[in-house]
Image (tube, rainbow, N blue to C red; front, side):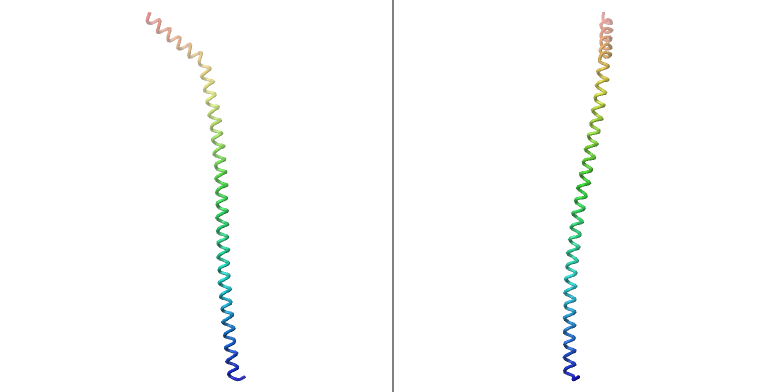
Length: 110
């Protein structure tokens, strides 16, 4: 094979190799860009999922707090009613005691 032909083949092979390298670099850059986009999508989805989970947990906590408040209010109302009943039951006793004290005071002054 003559020298010029060998040189042409070598040059052609080098050009082909350069093209292959350039294509590989472009492919690499495209894949890196795609991977970055995919990673950003995953991050965004994870953030949204975390936000939704946080909102659900907050809502559950609010519901628990509301239920606890209702329970406490019901207990307070029951205790108030019990105290009122006890007080009403003692009205006559207290009235008798006050009248007795008043009579003692009146008798002590006469």
